[in-house]
Length: 582
Image (spheres, helix red, strand yellow):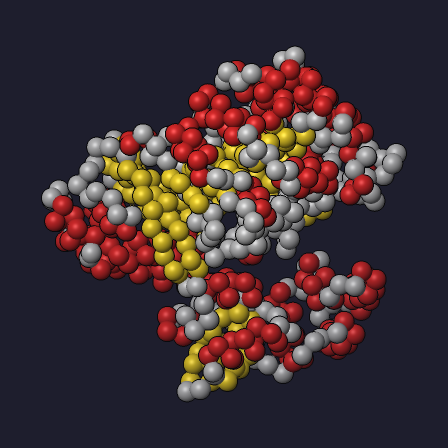
């Protein structure tokens, strides 16, 4: 079903749609750059998309359909699930007996057609359509969900009780409409790969937002009447007190949605207009995270692999809330999790359940703090200890003591850079000589959004952009250091400048919902505490002195690691500025 450039050129020439000279020029360009003639003609606006699609349909001998004004029944539309329709630009529009008619943009996509044939057991008849048609049909999926929401709310909003007794709240939570609303909110969040759901009551309505790739997006607004029911339903799921509205509550629950095992961490906080709910989504079915896939590379990756093989010492991961510190620690534990070692943790909260690891949830109400939990762990014959966070001097002292007495200790700390960790520990009351002798490595990290592979755009820096970046970075020094990175060979010329380099910026396409980004990766700096560092810590050197020494020894800062990833086309320079500016 493939249409070659020669074949298309012949048909366009016969139809006299565009002058022969222009057609020949574009044909030569398509052949030279190995591009599709049709795409180039549409891109140069020599022919419009609908004309081109009709021409394709004529050549292939299949019908062309305009679906922009067609209303497709939900029963037929849902035969192809929304994620598949969106990703592969294929929609079902008519079903007769054992035959299903589908409209698509790419008739060469035999795999998707075969997949739908096997999944439905129906005979598939293909029609060609335009991008505009596909977009309009895809909106019908959204409209149907909104309509479903509207029906649920409109039919039942008047029935929602405002009583406060636990019995009434429990009854509301078990109502079918409320269950449907909460299920739909969760389903949307999973489909959009959100990390958090925010349900925020306001004076006259309830706002729902999803955090996707680190950025909050408005999802929908619901009437105030359903607020109490949603809160009650989530409290029931998370096994929380239904009639408690004055104090914060924390809980968790699990769901198995369409093959995805999801764990939800629930936080409920009383605010002026009611109770705000934030649910953190944790995908328990995702396995096989590696340090490499998280964005670590080069010397930094080697240092971590060397240090985690040692039987004792302390490795700290630092960064602000939501920078992926816990994920890094869990990945390290996954590497170390072998039958020959005993790994124990004290956490608040336990993010993921890990097999063969003894995980303890701290509970300050009964006196189980990080420090007390760690003290108890030391009597459990552990080889490796993970402390969720060093929050106070007592926990820090216990962690250092554990590292000194033959254990490998993994933990997190809130500092802005790897070098800033050492003076911070001294400020918390640690003895410099103890830090120097126990600390093995420090990893500082941030999360940046990855550019969408389908729509990212190549560009070179203009004079104006260079001036803007010079305000944020010491570009001359950074360039000299980047030239030493072997992974950038070929991407940076030896005598080249910033103007010679190719960078990428976000575009817009359906694969990324016109965001230009999809997914996240880490940017890191890894500081190894060797003999020189030990000497500097012992004499209480400043974080600036420590960082300069580490850079002399080859450490790339987070900013430099980010720029390396921008040069490789993984992320954008704008994104690096967004996450590294202080």
